[in-house]
Image (tube, rainbow, N blue to C red):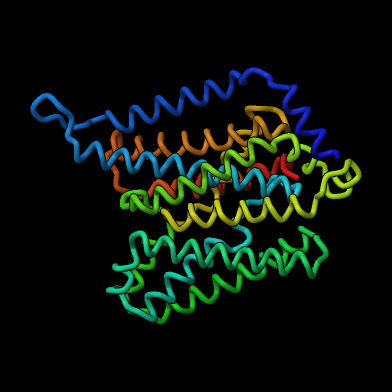
Length: 333
């Protein structure tokens, strides 16, 4: 009954689009235009179609990954009621690196090259999604829906996975380790188009589903007891959100690789900018800010600084500093 009331309330409260979101959308359009057009080579009065195609694919990948990470982090912080946590604490990046290490150890570098396209995306995303669903459903059942206890167990599992990955990497020869090392940070230079379409489809469906339930998420953010007292079927909603988090993190990690601190960075900026707990504002703001950070950062690296370094390394460094700063200032719960 309460969920139906929230749906009816949502239909009556069609407020105009927030101006801050419009500004963020304008910044993203400007960053995307700079990324595409800056230094674009021309021949016979027309831009190079090949370069334009490469840049468009990379731009779509940046926006897709930013959107997926921004949404997943907001949802995870809503469920955990803690703005210091991101889904990576559950060991998604550790599982991804362990999978790469196992593949190299078992099948060699030649097999890794064959699995680097759409097949590799399906394998990585599928395994991570299944592992996350088994972990979520199993732990929630045993802990009777205690999300905090589930996160603690997830942290222990993440440490175990990282230890196993490091152990396997120490057994590799230098050439195999060099290949695995390139997968430790997100790479946007070689995005497969089929994988990009699949990841974009999952992200789009999740975005539409979440935006239609923004009011319900506001109630869920009050906590399990308060939400249930207001008539929200919290356990079912919690499992649905965990499935969406698993899907978003899995497809973004399988597409480009792990980015641990991007979610923390963009959600902190979104909370500071929007000054609201409404998910109708936080979800699009986090997605837009994440896309702006990735597109503008990649433009800065490639066009202005002429550097080939990985943008993910800089993001991890800045996100880590922000994490420590916010902890010291006591801004996060």
